Image (cartoon, rainbow, N blue to C red; front, side, top):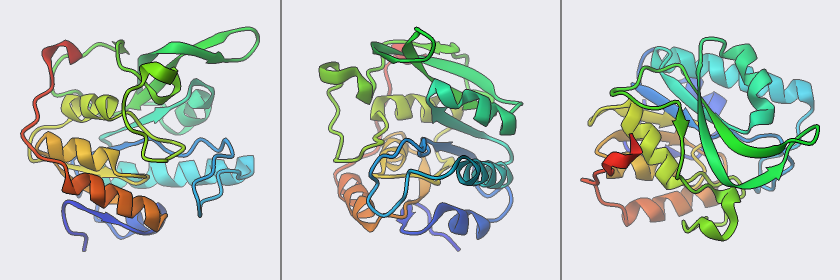
Length: 221
């Protein structure tokens, strides 16, 4: 049903349920964290049960469509919830330059990637030197007015670590299209779902200015 290299303006659960089993090679997503951010038409302020139901449904569907090859980028405070539904995941730590307030007098210095996929080459389980949106002035990427913007550099490293050229990458919460841009630059195909039509427009604008044949530097691996 879905064309390659296109972002669909629709709810991700609705879209995922229309996809066939094992129809993509890899899924990467940076989901909403239920932290009351303003995503326009999406309410990032669900009850605990509503949020857990959303996450469990998404994980169940992405397992099915990807043959259990996916990675999810989350904050450390969500690790226990996501491990509940992805006990088979490998944890990758990506460090932050700036700290954030954690719990019980601990400063936060990392974000987490949970992956069920085997890398296409050897990689470390601790990633350093990638600036993230919370790193303040050190983060040089344009954020495209998206409250949950994911680093393009981080996304490219994930896509290049877990896929080969020509593979199909799915992002069910694609936002302003970072996963699509990374995939196009790296010679992968993509499909994405985004519920906000304004973010879909931003993503299409980014893609129109994106060119393939981009090669990551060796120090990423």
